Length: 471
Image 1 (tube, rainbow, N blue to C red):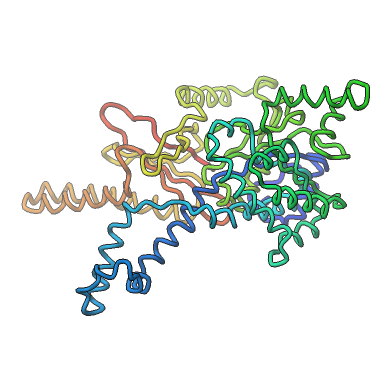
Image 2: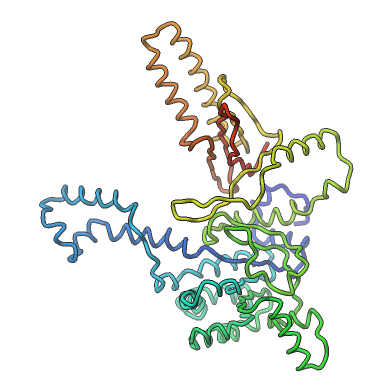
């Protein structure tokens, strides 16, 4: 695969091996990425927490619960039991679900291992996972035992009942724990897990195709560099080169390229950014909206495509532009003058942060206003489903006009027609809250976005209009 200008839709149809060859031909065979795997506790609450709640409130579970048997003394038939269960389901919305860390730790990190293999198969040579970094020290001593429990999930690499070790061996992946992991586990008095780590490194040390670097940073990066520099000088009697420090710190005997891109989650930060191999600050930054356990192959391919093609275009300052191009650029920047990437909100239902989608694209999007000029439809990515909805909106708008004409002729039908109009409007708005709404229709390759914006007399408030694709 040598095409250096492949279309995105074609990119998604390639095999892992084809993308790997394409990626290495353009980015080199020794590329490094940071995969700051995160969001595991939220994922656990969503998957296991809700699952356990449903199991505990099933008819079989509740009828077998002797501690609450008094609640069911008056249940004389299955109908009464079902009615009670329905009431329980209604009350479940306010039920608090807590994380069972013993169960959580068994599987929380497993998706990371599978995702790492997928990424390696797409051409990545080195993956850095900053497991523990100095800012986590602020969470207090109660967090360390929970984190060590989480790390125990890595021991499944040695368990023959799991296929992790086989996968890593087949793909030639060497696993290296770097940084102050020994000190961290000694603080947690977990020498058994330390022994597991040493065994994992020993069993994969002869693998040379890929490298998975699992990091622990207790001290601040600057102090770590100072300590390692002094240690190297005392041992070898000379000043270390940058490559000397990299090999000493990361425990590798091969060249590790600077980080090419960083894949994080949630708020835009670079926690655990690996020292020495990200000094230039040239890496592309990407952040998933959902926890990393939700990441799919196509989601990762979207990152790769952007990293290969979209981030390497010639800057507009460095070449001549047509007048129309400059005018469109002017419109784009003026429309987004108050929009800032990285700004978000906290959802009160769960207290989790999320970014505010807000980029407004100039032109090249289909805009259509209905007769009362109260709703503007911005349609992106021409899929059949979206055009069907667009057509239906036209039909609803025509129906509204017809209804208004009928209203003038027959006042007795006025209220009914208004109700129909309201229903049509409700269908158009499709659950919009206040004046903003966005509807995601996801297919196998990428997310198509339909944005419905309501204009109000006082002007349009900023609305989520992040258009993933546009015509």
